[in-house]
Length: 75
Image (cartoon, rainbow, N blue to C red; front, side, top):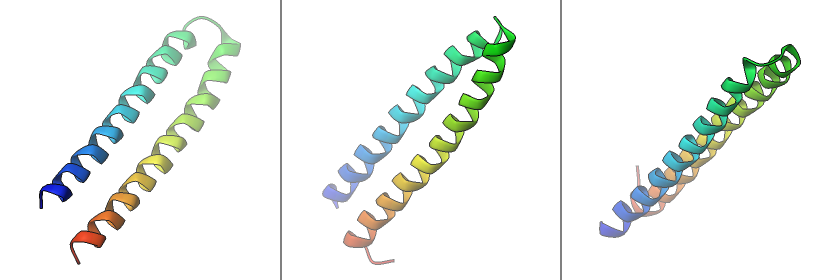
């Protein structure tokens, strides 16, 4: 049971760090929006790509975590 809890803890920590890094990038992009109109269009497109990446990456990590839990605990 200790092995499962360390795996889950490790995966959740990794997911939290990815979300923090993406939040910092979005914060920087938010500051850049204020400056120019071209930057606004560029940042809006980039933000859509980043949000899509976050959703896809989170889904992958949850799917991978589910697979690891299925290996140790049969649901």
